[in-house]
Image 1 (cartoon, rainbow, N blue to C red):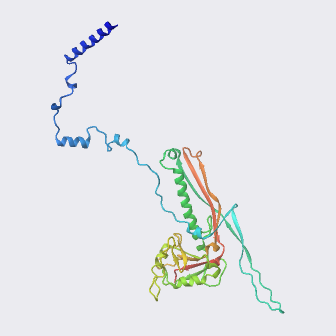
Image 2 (image 1 turned 180 degrees about the vertical axis):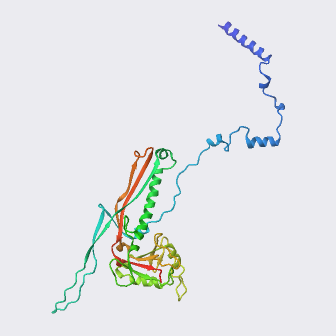
Image 3 (image 1 turned 45 degrees about the vertical axis):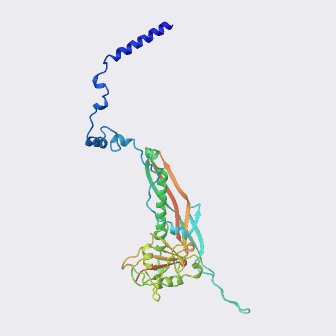
Length: 350
């Protein structure tokens, strides 16, 4: 055993000695000595750093593929009109396609009587029925199933948020300017009267005396005094931004102070003559030399009724338009005036 191992070691030693005396490598494959390397010029080194000589960089196609991509966490959304009018109006939820209200059209009469004389018969209030139907808002759109699966954001949630914001803008405009045909009836679409006596179906309108201008504070004082006392608790102003900008420039004639004063309390909001100001893009803007109604004042909680029929409804259909997924979103709402004495209008007209 020992003789065999010694014989193997001797053969290995002879092979090593033989290789050390023979040049079995091609000269071109030998590693050159350090002193044989020719130093490169500064320009050559700079070019190597800049262009890489086949090195990977973030500027070429191959290197760009392996770069870490920025993570998309959200989509910057376009601002939508806030639901200011909904916040100040009366609201109710129903389980049918309309709301029926019974209310007094006129007041019940009464008088004074004496011990021995029978008073005359008094008049009973006239009752009337108000019917407010609900109308349907909708949105219909399609997204491919592959995009829903592979997108970096939750596209379905983003889509529903966008539709919800658009619905809010649609209802805001309808509550103020709606025709009543396939949409709520807006309070600005009703007839007006300049008489101070209340007429059912008409709003009392106060006129500034100059087209497109709010000339003085008198019109606001007159508007507040024209609203009956029971409605003053909870009354608010609702106006366009252009009207609010002009109000901020009006000064009191005697003191020279601005009529509008900022509320310095945190989250106090804007007020005019002690009543909150609500800004809405659905209210008409001031127009030079043109009569518009950019301001309304009153108790909208008692004057306007919003009707909701259920919640936001989403129908997701992945079959009928394959390979696309169709989303059909609906919401049913209604709205109408229920008390014409609770709201006053200001028109910038001659």
